[in-house]
Image (cartoon, rainbow, N blue to C red; front, side):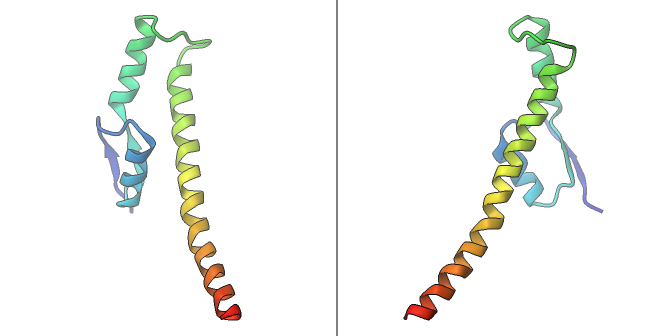
Length: 90
């Protein structure tokens, strides 16, 4: 079973990538959520519906993680293809 991490530290995509890379099954960035809620309360961010700011944040983190993971997966296959083509030509 992969551990779950509750931390105030993760804010950026890189932080989430590192935590999941080191084995976290889930990350709860409570401080980021509280910051967003505070910004909404102070009207620095305007929401169309309640909770929209947190939903948008989660969506952005998910898209960023997917982008990083897709690059990690594609790089080894590219390296293997490059080695194969160099063996054929050389």
